[in-house]
Image 1 (cartoon, helix red, strand yellow):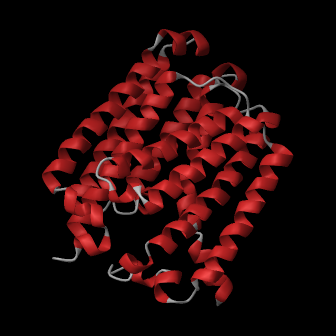
Image 2 (image 1 turned 180 degrees about the vertical axis):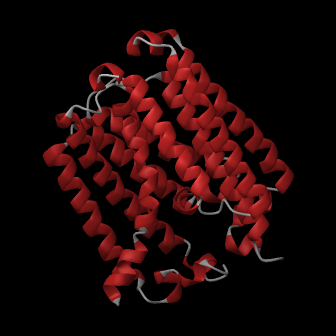
Image 3 (image 1 turned 90 degrees about the vertical axis):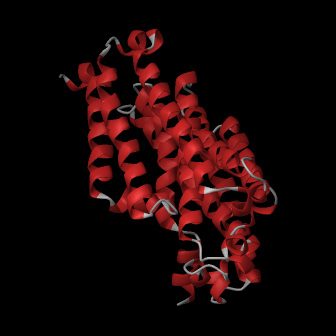
Amino acid sequence: MKAIKLIELIRPKQWLKNVFCFAPILFSGNLLNWNKLSINLIAFVAFCGISSCVYILNDISDVESDRNHKKKRFRPIASGDISIKEAWTFFFFLVMLVAALCVVFLPVSFGIVIVLYLINNFLYSYKLKHMVLLDVFSISIGFMLRVVGGGFSIDVQLSSWMIITTIFISLFLGISKRRAELSNADEGNATKQRKVLDDYSIDFVEQMNTIAATGTILSYALYTASDKTITTFHTDKLIYTTPFVIYGIFRYLYLIHKKNLGENPASIVTKDIPIIVTGILWVVVCAAIIYKAKLGL
């Protein structure tokens, strides 16, 4: 029973967010290079470990507010199934495990990114999550560091457009989460569940989300059509993957506005069939275009 609760504490379903660290290897043309791919997989595991540390840290700092939430009150620490002392012990165990992976298999630059990721989330858990706008920017930095870490792990140069697209899409996800929290909060109990919600409103977050969604689509489209991208991949066909991104954003907005979802992005991505199919098709088409010569297409 305790082991099950510890697994629940580290939220393996949320590890899906760490696939962002594979973006550099996909768009650098190295996905078929086993040596780089194996290192990238280790980097992914390291991010899964450190992100689980962050979830433990967040649950420790949020224990009281979680107890006022209709769903989060069942989390292991908030429910009392895992004590705070046990949570801290598990936290340090995972930190040491991730440190060992970084020292043995990964470059120093990746280790620095992991440290920055942990510092950013420590600041988020104890300060930034209570500060309007800075809370969603902190979430965005976390996604950006995943991409940067993925690039550093295999020693490839990152595209500026990739970084910009990551910033916009992570802001979109973070702001969508705030909107869902506002919509689903118990009446008169929103600020007890998350204090910063008092500084947001549905109209405000919808305006920001429109900007973030637009920025995501435009920055991705400009990346696919940029001279550097065309020169790197010797094709201008990557622009044809943009409709998948547009549909994915529109579908996500539909789920937020019509289904009151968005509080748990990982749940949407793993349960909504249209988004799953769109994501798979996007990866397949991107890979086919980028690797057509190597795949003999």
